[in-house]
Length: 222
Image (cartoon, rainbow, N blue to C red; front, top):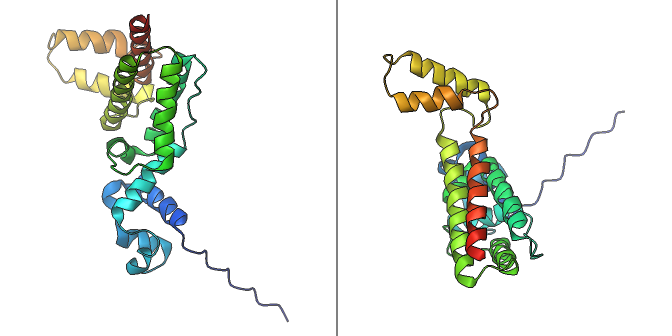
């Protein structure tokens, strides 16, 4: 007789597993898809049972934010502050692309977790180790975060994929083909003479803006 296969042991419910599923749920459908009921369903339990592991939705959001910051390597206070900020900017933008819901959430929590606090402290430490004054460090942090979050948010609402050159060009050509000749000359000049040039991608604007900020801060530092 063939042996019966044993049923797989049910994976225990833990806070960490609940946060993993919450992040997956938000990644797939946005924060509006995240609720205690839906999260409990994904975990295969009743909604009331979920409260044994997380007290409320705010605690879940706090944990999700901390998960995103935990993905980022901490900047090193080795004196090369521009290298550290450049790497951090790209890593943070990458995290915001993986987790689009996080753009509006990362800096909104009143009870930040250990990974969140460690990240902020390391960024400040790298700036201070690079010779920036306390006041300039505050300006640099605010300016860099405003740029990174703003760029990520703008990318999310573009009518094309940020790195898709072919789609960008097709949409632009279709748009201008519908306009009367000579209409909006400056917009046409920028689009036809720059955006539609081979090799252009919107992602390059991030590189340009980031370097401009770092160069400006360097001048202020000295």
